[in-house]
Amino acid sequence: MESTGRVVGLGIEILNQSNYRLWKSCMESYLGSEDLWDVVVGNNTTPPRENAATPEATKEWTRKNAKAEFALKRSISSSIFEHVSRCTSASINNNTHTPCLYTIITQTKHMAKLIFFLAVQIIFLAAVSSAGDDGEDFARTIDRKILGLHKKEKLTHFKVYWHDILSGPKPSSIRIKPPVTNSTSYFGGVTMFDNALTTTVQINSTLLGQAQGFYAGAAQKEFSFLVGMNFAFKTGKYNGSTITILGRNPVLSKVREMPIVGGSGLFRFARGYVEARTKLLNLKNGDARPGQNNRNRRSEPEPNRNT
Image (cartoon, rainbow, N blue to C red; front, side, top):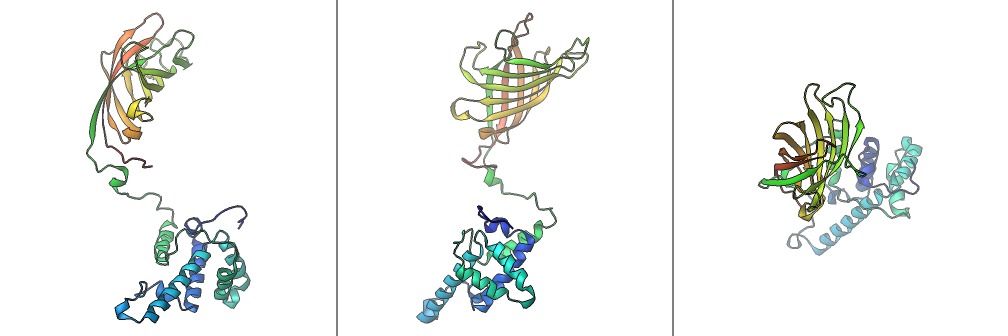
């Protein structure tokens, strides 16, 4: 095991089954031989009450507890498993786990990296180790409150304008794959876009963010696109938040509805729908400016929570 230039915490190393069993065996042997076992397991893990014991008993418990705590801290130092494995493999037939670990705890110069030191965690780690051995513990149920899902959902309505500019020296939409030969419906064609989202139909009105994604010709007999895009907002409290839209857009229909499939930031766990209505269309160059009515439900997430 290489240990140069790295810090190995108990949280990483101890979950390795062989390391955990070795560590647990060594610690049990050491704590038992040093008469420290009674302060980390059983009914003696809390200090004795002063009115039920002599001051000497309290002092002795405190001394043992401090010694056990120090041993546990040292036992999870950054290179401890390298030393334990080495001296254990050299003396496995002589049953010398205890003096080996005692030497490491009392003489190692490298200070421990304290991840946690309560010996009661041994039981917890044993459960985690055994549960994860078969690889089936990669998913678990979590409390809805952690993600803010216990709060009442909010219904939000947005009205924005989406500017799909294909013409000029700086188009916002670029065709990256042409449609199939002789197609009259753009079937098979793919366009990527980074379109402005504004407050009015005028492109120079207040910029709210960008619509970034693609549309692809998905029908052979009509103009109908598969649209996948994010509304990436850049203003106000929604700055940095996104809404993700994925759906069918039959562009010649007066109203096209597409589902909201998720979001991020303030729109985490968002769901809802978008209605698109074309406000301006230049038949010569293909520039279009649909209005987007966006209605979504969302749970206000906890601030500064990562998921």
